[in-house]
Amino acid sequence: MLRPAPAPGREAGRALDAGSIAGGAVASAVPLARDLALVALAKAAVSALVLALGFRAVSDDDFARVVLAQAWAHAPRLDPTGTSWLPVPFWLNGALFRVFAPTLEVARAIAFALGVASAALIYISARWITGDRRAALAGTLLAGAFPWSACLGVATVPELPTAALTLFAVASLVTPPAGPAPPAGRALLGALALALATLSRYEPWPVAAVFAAMALLSSARLGQGRAAQATLALAALAALAGPAAWIAWNRVAHGEALHFLARVASYRSALGPGSDGSLLRLFAYPAAMVREEPELFLSPIALALVAWRARRGAAPGAARPFPPLLRAARPYALPGAVAALQIAALSLALVRDGAPTHHPERATLLALLLLALAVGDLLARAFRGASSGARRALGGALLAVLCVGLFFRPHLRREHFNPRTDEVAIGRAAAELTPPSAPLLIEVVDYGHLATLAALGRPWVAHPDRSIDPRDPPVRSSFDDAASLARRAAGLGAAYLVGRVRPPVLDLAGPPLATRGAFGLWAAPSAAGAPEDRAAPEERATPEDRARRPADPAPEAAP
Image 1 (cartoon, rainbow, N blue to C red):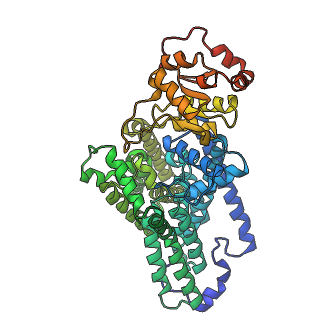
Image 2 (image 1 turned 45 degrees about the vertical axis):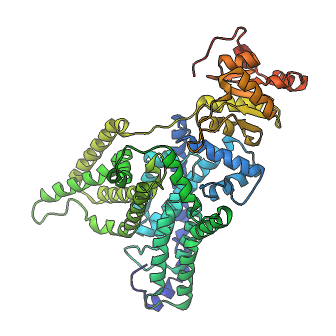
């Protein structure tokens, strides 16, 4: 978009291309729809495979977001959480919860659908960047399949949709190699996508500033009509609308415009000083990218080495054994520069305790998607245009890259995923065996109780027994002794207890109504005089639950 404007006649001849990669030609809509269907099917297959392999959540944040969206569906409000978390994901999930049901299963179905929709956005972005259908398709298929993209395509967190929206916005300003400069309407679409992204996560905020500056520069170039200039100026404003609105809201609601930054910094500070110095923090994001997706970085190196050897070994005057790829890589320069600026901003925020507290590679997804698009594009071009010998060499090199990645990947990963299987199972059991309005007291061992709340599907009737927020004073769990548990349950009017199967709970409430792994569900002693409360779950209990209830409680179950 920063190239000189095309001549008026040429621009008029392509007027139907405004905002559409189909170019307005009816015939081109058919391959576009076919490609989008292929991309969607491929992403759905990858997502199904990830679920079949047992992946369910990146961290406890996945369940926390579901719980907050369930609470919003029950009682909507403008700011769903009142914390530093941005609102759009909760609005979307909460609205769909109100249409369907506020369950963990619906949340995961929404995540699956958003992953497929994200793949479609990535394909459109690739078409805008490269101007080449086959190259865009190859890059998109790789971008939907590398491990972090695959996992985030089914996780109940907004990282992949946010990165796809951000990529869509950046691509809307790119001039493909064959030209012409993209129409102003496309930039406005990108700005609207970026507004959604900036109200979903904070990583796109630096991109929004860069986008606005580029749109304003484009509006000032020679040869632009007034309508195009006005559209680009509007796009610049729309790109900044999300951050501006959130800052204004924090000023009104909390009395401090940057309250969200102070909240994140206070949380990181409460976790305690990290062992990494400022220099290591500065390079933490690039290091996380290489550590988590080594194959994406080794593949272009292998491609370059094979190309160099093929050209060096070619006889003078013979046909090129390898196609020129440098020119094909040029369209990725502008998006890559924007992604690099984003990572630099995130690195500075990490040094100042204002960045995510875990799995830092999530925040670099825009750069990883761009790298995957470029690698897939260049590999497809290389296999298409190389000699048979060069193709064999490239295939061997890529096989070696995969083997290296498979060998080293388990040793490189610092943080692992936790599906919280037992916590989810007991939450589902509680949803089935307790009346919808019955209050529950939930034992808080760690943040796994969020998985129980998400599976329960009605967090507004559940009461965690304590806070483990590092900013709060430490509190002993009421489940640690029977007397404290009895007082806590009576004070809250809890009808049911959910916690680990341990002597204090067994002494107070007797055998559990249901057990799932180390966790159990009990009728609270305060409900002992209410036959209807105790009989209802007994009537609905499954034979398996009845069989699992111990006649003589064991001294203590494994935590």
